Image: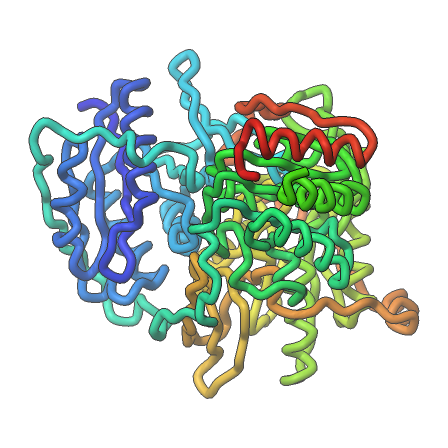
Length: 331
Length: 250
């Protein structure tokens, strides 16, 4: 039997998380490079309902891992269920998207099996029959190629956007689905989760904006936000921010871009005084054009910028606002 | 808590090309600072004792000094250069061994570190201790059966979770407003105890790393970046030209 890669797709609130297709693409790519076979699993109270959608993809098999104890999600139940599946099926490599939910249970699952997770990977390499996983370090300033130094199963999670979900290949025929009932004993699940809710009314939908002017720590003080606001108004764009600005209450939470805020892909993203922490970049790297202004020439934001301006935003923004106004006035 | 290179510190690879040169400025890992602040606020509400723990070489004692100055009662330092290179699994094992005689009700840590960025150590520690955990926490309230915490989910969603104690929580940045150490706090910190735990004391608990950094490097750029230079006025003119004639957004 060849080694097997198992992709655990994510469903939440009765919907497959789209990021799961990216992980399927990753699994297909690693399978092609290594010659290993590829399978997928869905976990939940009613996992079978999602299995058909997954089985359309080019995978050898889909496991629907089911127990009433898997609803609502808890790390205790998910770790227990997957441990049973992995013990029975013995895959070599287990792949998942690096979502908040996976971050919540996969280190527990791996630890319970005496194994490790290479988390938040952005790619893989297959060199001299050795599998390496690439991940960002030091907030994206450096990258590392990391190998496993343990027995299987190996666990790896992929960052949102690391692979293209629309590149996940469909199979010629639907893959067979195997329902795997799991037994989760009373007392295993200790947390009692309440209903999922949305805090504030999402007043602003930044995903529809064509131009976004976004501000980060470089703005220094709340009163300076006005400078950036004027530029956004001149451009006819929406004002947005990185997390620390919203944490400080300088802009409302619904203007936050990044893994805990909105994910956007406007025509133009202007990043002002944003260093480009991974959590921010995952929310805006799909933008068509990125202009970054930062005084630190080594800021990770410049890695993904189309136009880079190394300088102080307080010097650059006022004349830029004026020039934009002039241009709009037909100057 | 963890000491990490300062956010804007220029990093250089060392001779192994698998780690950085250590001669940079360090600071407290930011999410850990929020975890510390939350522990102090919980103590102010409910009483008890707050203990800070870190691992790393002598320089990382600074993290504990700052914590003690802000109001922590005592500290534990797993002090050895070797701790820097441990993976999350072994770091958590070392912590579990160092606190085996303690009787904590709640362990808080930042949701991830600014250097490795594993986002795993807290969850692994919970599993090693056999405790429940919850991650990316934005609020902690004590109730009759334990605690009610507010988990941050993605895309603006949240969820309250009731859980028993003892437990491990990983704390999201922004859960609270950080305090500054006071002069009197800094003075008092000098007399607070720091228990040193050497590598030998926890050696039997840890093993070989389960994952290995083969090489560390400056990431290859995937995008062609055009630098725009000049005086601020010139830069503004050049940018507007791009916006109008190339991007066509003006």
